[in-house]
Image (tube, rainbow, N blue to C red; front, top):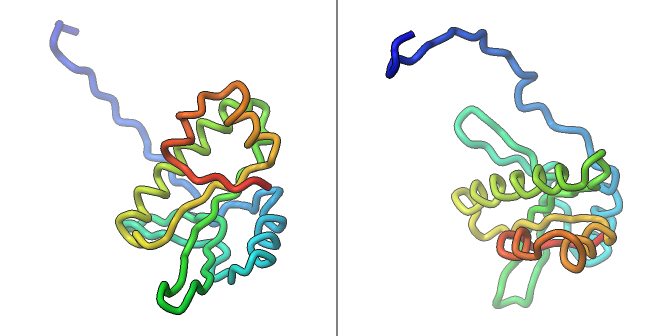
Length: 145
């Protein structure tokens, strides 16, 4: 191959199983119950965001009424357990997923706030332990489970 030329190779495109709803996280029901106890109405389980021909699924969508003059508050909540073999890898995936969901929500439902629900031990580690605070602090709102 001469310098400056590019080699091309046709690779088969693998079909994925579509935009299937992923399985529920270990703490899904606990987060849902906590939201309901706090006065939220679960409106979506899961909350679907469509873009083009694709869909992503945030674990929960919820709303609650505020004072009469303020209307209603809407949120989407992504639940993460951080139980994988590598907590750092779990954080990388959660942060990437959060950024994608936040970007899509800003375009499609800017009035809906996005939260990441995590176990208390993970929350403490992310903000008081080994992970840089800035990784999540600038990008997300966390709910402790």
